[in-house]
Image (cartoon, rainbow, N blue to C red; front, side):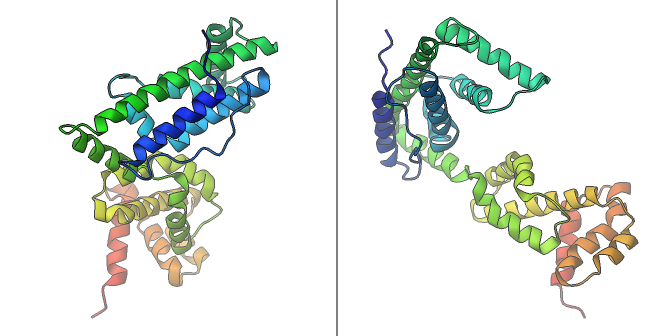
Length: 291
């Protein structure tokens, strides 16, 4: 009944990468995490969940759901959601809070289905959970590989490949925003903002900026969005008057943009002027030569 092995999963992912590389060279990344040698206990289960997380949330984050929603699977993202909460359950210190309790409840239901115990204890419980998860991963990978046949279709294949190319090009990895974020922070100042945590909170917004921008304007759109978000953050962290802020910052060079925006803060609060609009006005004023 449970026939999927670690080698099976590894081979299936290699096959998927090869099939996709024919059409999209950077569609799937390599997974450097190692699968367990055998599905035989608790450590094996931990390693399988971490490998699965790397598969669905990192290495094949874009093409896997794209292919899984084509025939023959027509699947939703339940496989991804269950792997995410399993990884959270196994690797995080859960607290007596609503979100963590929901994760624990989801994990208990999953284990009950996978090995008959909501809280597995024995090696055989974890071995059963391994095989249960491995079989589900095998079904997803096989379905995605079969869906690759549609990419070769003489009628619909061109459109499907173009859509996949577009999704891959728009799917910026988190680290790709870092150089732009660093430059923006250097330009407008950084009053104690943890840029890594800030990026984590704003990542979905910045990815939406990538998706909604014209192809030749993607980086400019991302820069504008990051600038606007940084300025909003700075604005919220400086609960002082505009003149005090100006004196505090000792205006010069790269601080000029922040100072000007702080001076216009009241206009934004009292009217309909947004920070991005103010930023555009300030940039224009700086770039325009004086008469």
